[in-house]
Image (cartoon, rainbow, N blue to C red; front, side, top):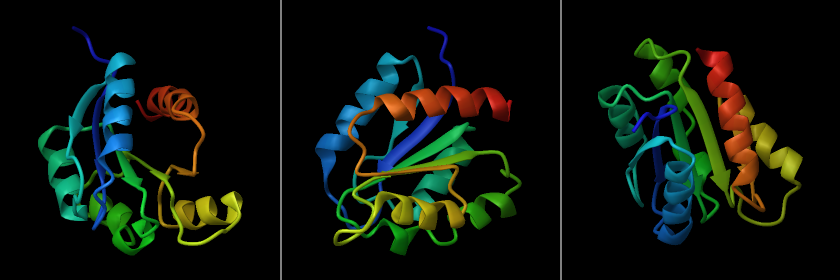
Length: 139
C-alpha cells in the first residue's frame, strides 16, 4: 500500500481519553496515512522521539482534558533544535479548561508554534482537508 504521509498521533499528558484517539487513528488510516499511534498519556519527548524515529511528516496531538497547553510550550522549539523545522504540528480536542471562545483558544496554540489548532472540533473532515493542503505545501 502506498501511503500519503507518515503521521505521529497521541493524547498528551495526564489524559486517558482513548476513544477519540482511536477514532482519529482509524480515520487517518482510512484516508491512507501511515499512522504511528502513541496512545494516551504520551509526553512531549515521546512525540519528538517517535517523529524522529519514523521520519514523520506531521505530529497530531489530542488533548481532551483541557490541559494540553501545559505540555506543549517548547514543542516547536524542540523540533527546530533537531533541524525538523518543516514538521507539521497540529493539536485538537478540548483545548482549554472552562468556556473560552474558539478563536482565542486556537490562537494561543498557533502562537506556540502549531500549524493548526482545533478547539472542540465537530468532525474529522476539517483536519483531513487541512492536512492534505499543508502536506502539499510542506513538500
